[in-house]
Image 1 (cartoon, helix red, strand yellow):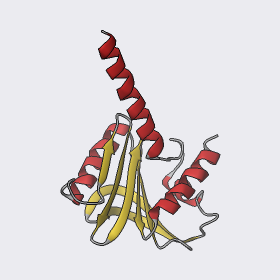
Image 2: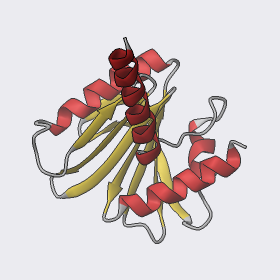
Image 3: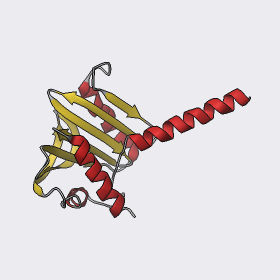
Length: 158
Protein backbone atom coordinates (compact mmCIF):
# COMPACT_ATOMS: atom_id res chain seq x y z
CA UNK A 1 0.00 0.00 0.00
CA UNK A 2 2.81 2.39 0.89
CA UNK A 3 4.61 1.61 -2.39
CA UNK A 4 1.49 2.42 -4.44
CA UNK A 5 1.05 5.72 -2.61
CA UNK A 6 4.69 6.60 -3.27
CA UNK A 7 4.33 5.82 -6.98
CA UNK A 8 1.18 7.96 -7.23
CA UNK A 9 2.96 10.87 -5.53
CA UNK A 10 5.96 10.57 -7.86
CA UNK A 11 3.68 10.60 -10.91
CA UNK A 12 1.82 13.68 -9.64
CA UNK A 13 5.09 15.53 -8.98
CA UNK A 14 6.42 14.63 -12.44
CA UNK A 15 3.23 15.76 -14.18
CA UNK A 16 3.04 19.06 -12.32
CA UNK A 17 6.73 19.80 -12.85
CA UNK A 18 6.42 19.10 -16.59
CA UNK A 19 3.51 21.51 -16.90
CA UNK A 20 5.68 24.18 -15.26
CA UNK A 21 8.62 23.48 -17.59
CA UNK A 22 6.49 23.42 -20.74
CA UNK A 23 4.51 26.63 -20.67
CA UNK A 24 1.16 26.72 -22.42
CA UNK A 25 -0.01 30.34 -22.08
CA UNK A 26 -3.47 31.21 -23.40
CA UNK A 27 -5.81 34.15 -22.90
CA UNK A 28 -9.02 33.71 -20.96
CA UNK A 29 -11.87 31.95 -22.74
CA UNK A 30 -13.85 35.12 -23.44
CA UNK A 31 -11.11 36.66 -25.61
CA UNK A 32 -11.57 36.70 -29.37
CA UNK A 33 -8.94 35.61 -31.88
CA UNK A 34 -8.22 39.23 -32.72
CA UNK A 35 -7.90 40.25 -29.06
CA UNK A 36 -5.63 37.27 -28.34
CA UNK A 37 -3.28 38.52 -31.08
CA UNK A 38 -3.57 42.28 -30.56
CA UNK A 39 -2.79 42.12 -26.83
CA UNK A 40 0.70 40.91 -27.83
CA UNK A 41 1.38 44.17 -29.73
CA UNK A 42 3.93 45.78 -27.40
CA UNK A 43 7.58 44.83 -27.02
CA UNK A 44 7.21 43.12 -30.39
CA UNK A 45 5.23 45.43 -32.68
CA UNK A 46 2.54 43.72 -34.75
CA UNK A 47 3.39 44.42 -38.42
CA UNK A 48 0.80 42.35 -40.21
CA UNK A 49 -2.08 40.03 -39.46
CA UNK A 50 -4.69 38.11 -41.37
CA UNK A 51 -7.11 35.21 -41.19
CA UNK A 52 -6.23 31.65 -42.16
CA UNK A 53 -7.74 28.16 -42.19
CA UNK A 54 -4.64 25.98 -42.28
CA UNK A 55 -1.00 25.80 -41.18
CA UNK A 56 1.57 23.54 -42.88
CA UNK A 57 -1.25 22.22 -45.09
CA UNK A 58 -3.28 21.06 -42.08
CA UNK A 59 -6.87 22.33 -41.97
CA UNK A 60 -7.44 23.71 -38.47
CA UNK A 61 -10.49 25.86 -39.07
CA UNK A 62 -10.65 29.62 -38.78
CA UNK A 63 -7.60 31.18 -37.18
CA UNK A 64 -5.47 34.30 -37.24
CA UNK A 65 -1.77 34.85 -37.92
CA UNK A 66 0.56 37.63 -36.88
CA UNK A 67 3.96 38.84 -38.02
CA UNK A 68 5.89 40.91 -35.48
CA UNK A 69 8.87 43.27 -35.70
CA UNK A 70 12.03 41.87 -34.06
CA UNK A 71 10.74 38.29 -34.33
CA UNK A 72 11.76 36.28 -37.36
CA UNK A 73 8.77 34.04 -37.62
CA UNK A 74 5.00 33.84 -37.37
CA UNK A 75 2.39 33.24 -34.72
CA UNK A 76 -0.81 31.35 -35.54
CA UNK A 77 -3.77 31.26 -33.15
CA UNK A 78 -6.90 29.10 -33.37
CA UNK A 79 -9.90 29.10 -31.05
CA UNK A 80 -12.64 26.46 -30.91
CA UNK A 81 -16.03 26.03 -29.29
CA UNK A 82 -14.90 23.36 -26.82
CA UNK A 83 -11.77 21.65 -25.48
CA UNK A 84 -12.91 18.41 -27.13
CA UNK A 85 -12.82 20.00 -30.60
CA UNK A 86 -9.43 21.53 -29.73
CA UNK A 87 -8.03 18.08 -28.87
CA UNK A 88 -9.25 16.64 -32.19
CA UNK A 89 -7.68 19.49 -34.16
CA UNK A 90 -4.47 19.16 -32.10
CA UNK A 91 -4.16 15.47 -32.92
CA UNK A 92 -4.67 16.25 -36.60
CA UNK A 93 -1.97 18.93 -36.44
CA UNK A 94 0.70 16.86 -34.67
CA UNK A 95 0.31 13.96 -37.13
CA UNK A 96 1.92 16.24 -39.73
CA UNK A 97 5.28 16.03 -38.02
CA UNK A 98 5.71 12.31 -38.47
CA UNK A 99 7.95 10.13 -36.39
CA UNK A 100 8.37 11.12 -32.73
CA UNK A 101 11.77 9.40 -32.78
CA UNK A 102 13.22 12.35 -34.72
CA UNK A 103 15.91 14.43 -33.06
CA UNK A 104 14.55 17.71 -31.66
CA UNK A 105 11.02 16.38 -31.21
CA UNK A 106 9.12 16.84 -27.95
CA UNK A 107 5.42 16.02 -27.80
CA UNK A 108 3.67 16.03 -24.43
CA UNK A 109 -0.04 15.59 -23.90
CA UNK A 110 -1.67 16.01 -20.53
CA UNK A 111 -5.34 15.91 -19.63
CA UNK A 112 -5.92 19.60 -20.18
CA UNK A 113 -3.07 20.70 -22.48
CA UNK A 114 -0.45 19.62 -25.01
CA UNK A 115 2.97 20.84 -26.12
CA UNK A 116 5.00 20.18 -29.26
CA UNK A 117 8.53 21.36 -30.07
CA UNK A 118 10.22 20.22 -33.27
CA UNK A 119 11.98 21.21 -36.47
CA UNK A 120 9.90 20.85 -39.61
CA UNK A 121 11.37 21.45 -43.05
CA UNK A 122 14.13 23.57 -41.51
CA UNK A 123 11.75 25.66 -39.38
CA UNK A 124 11.67 25.60 -35.58
CA UNK A 125 8.15 25.10 -34.28
CA UNK A 126 6.70 25.38 -30.81
CA UNK A 127 3.02 24.67 -30.50
CA UNK A 128 0.61 24.11 -27.64
CA UNK A 129 -3.05 23.67 -26.89
CA UNK A 130 -5.00 24.44 -23.77
CA UNK A 131 -8.73 24.84 -23.19
CA UNK A 132 -10.20 26.13 -26.47
CA UNK A 133 -6.92 27.42 -27.93
CA UNK A 134 -4.14 26.20 -30.23
CA UNK A 135 -1.03 28.35 -30.63
CA UNK A 136 1.69 27.70 -33.20
CA UNK A 137 4.98 29.60 -33.25
CA UNK A 138 7.39 29.17 -36.13
CA UNK A 139 10.68 30.92 -36.71
CA UNK A 140 14.32 31.27 -35.71
CA UNK A 141 14.00 31.70 -31.93
CA UNK A 142 10.45 30.80 -30.94
CA UNK A 143 11.52 30.22 -27.29
CA UNK A 144 12.10 33.96 -26.79
CA UNK A 145 8.73 34.88 -28.24
CA UNK A 146 7.03 32.15 -26.14
CA UNK A 147 8.47 33.75 -23.00
CA UNK A 148 7.04 37.10 -24.12
CA UNK A 149 3.60 35.56 -24.79
CA UNK A 150 3.66 33.92 -21.37
CA UNK A 151 4.53 37.21 -19.66
CA UNK A 152 1.78 39.14 -21.46
CA UNK A 153 -0.94 36.57 -20.83
CA UNK A 154 0.05 36.26 -17.16
CA UNK A 155 -0.43 40.04 -16.78
CA UNK A 156 -3.71 40.08 -18.71
CA UNK A 157 -5.24 37.08 -16.90
CA UNK A 158 -4.67 38.48 -13.39
